Length: 380
Image 1 (spheres, rainbow, N blue to C red):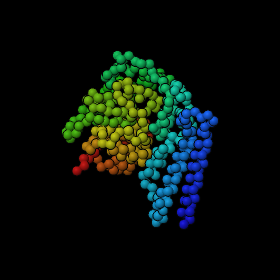
Image 2: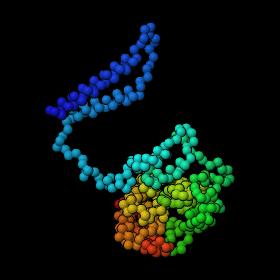
Image 3: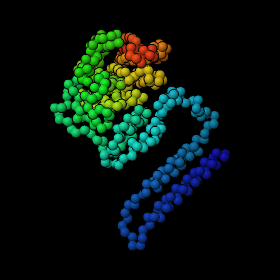
Image 4: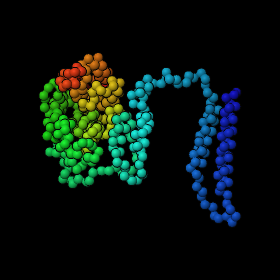
């Protein structure tokens, strides 16, 4: 009884408020003496919003009055929230990662509309993406771009003699202002095309999987490789090599201290500027192979890696391949954590090779490499 009376009272208040607002609007539009032909009046946005809110409230209350609540039905509680929703919200807070970094978000969105985006925006973009704020809000400003290169300077070959320095805004990066400088700083960053051209082609150890061997494995299994995704693919060398075999591969990469996305694009390939914790922007069951590069390693929390692998499963077609390329972890963790985690996919092991990581960090931490080629089962 009390519940019904309360609903009736709220309905009465809402209807009175509607009438008052309507009278207010009508009173403001009364014609003066010697009226002119009627012209349409603009309804202020705030009045429209208030009226819509009141109408929605009336509709909501009416539904409740016509359908009294069944107190025998248990309302959702914290214990009934899906466990994976709770887990994932801790790993990558849903719809809140941007709000968790208000200083960076405010700096990113503090600009003059319809003019050039403020300098330093790219540093803020990378900082937000690395903190899980992705996709970023759209802006109404013009991003600075390099001068238009000549058509002859953009190579069709994904392994040009040299990447074009003029196609990069080097003010974003420090200390280098050219690809030659990056190569001198670290020749293994992926910007030296003379080194990259031999990658994925030679069999130097059990951890290697040359592309000709990969294609032969697929052919023997009557699998076709047409579309692929390279996660953490650096400058896009895997995509470039597969392009020469008429296989289209897109590369996810970030501009951490160097122009990785620019390098991928300069090679005539497609870069995806997305972080590892982002849901892959690919439709379900649409790619034939997914390669996880060295960016996918033990530094990723195990639960985050598990979500990543199951997202890979989502985009792979039946019979497609997952290639973990030089995944590294502590030897004991590979046996107790990562091998069982990978095994949850239920994929067929085409290749599973391990070897000790022999650099100083690997020796100190007892780390090992894993290269695995796994095939997604075909439903029966």
